[in-house]
Length: 312
Image 1 (tube, rainbow, N blue to C red):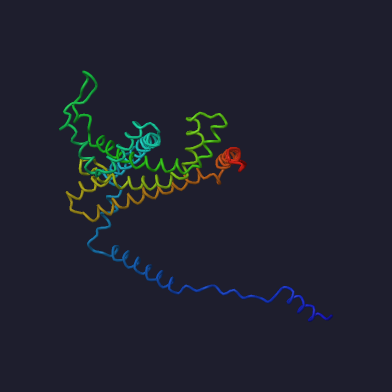
Image 2: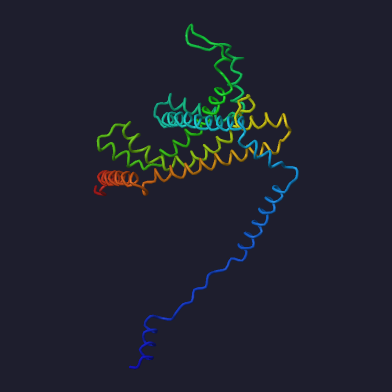
């Protein structure tokens, strides 16, 4: 057998060569080019617009009152989310309780605060003195207006409203955990508190974190509502300045830049939190995954032991 015959035999054994031609998406390319041109045109129209004083934007971006307003916005967002998360956890557990009183209170709380506008709640707390001129415990009372400052009223209004939404998010996360995990943990002798803290919540966090991150970003922007009760957050600080110099667009651009920066940081933090609680990533994830695997094996054993045998 000569060399050419051997090569042909080898080629026939391998099979015919197939040339792969990638599918062309001409429509997708056209849409991308049009979108890019629109973005460039919009950016150029803003940068070259003679009605926007970009020097003023750069100056007020780091102006002291703007920085203080941005700091208050961050404080309100973080504190309201922390309080809302604690309230959400409490009322989620209450709503899942078999106790009708606790269940009814949780349902009423969620129904009321999700059913009334957040702006109305903020105004109500700021004007609480009209309903209770003095508040306190027993004989010790103080003037309500002294306690209910714009910051305190904003924090209470934002936190209570957020707690109602977080209760449903936490409840959905807990319900998303396989019930067999709790049954297996009970078989291992864990108490209900241990099961909730060490088994259910760590696994539910994978489902809770993404919507909670969205709520935090929404909260960041909702803090602008507190301008109606004179709390000097970011938007209020910008409004106070442009009420004096009439640089309305410039100050709104400054506020928007700060909102975008804070939102970007929050988004990055959410990404790393999701990776931290992902059972398939990182050292802690492997530990949680191993524990979950053991519980899964136990739960499967429980299901097999309780399954009907089919014998009469």
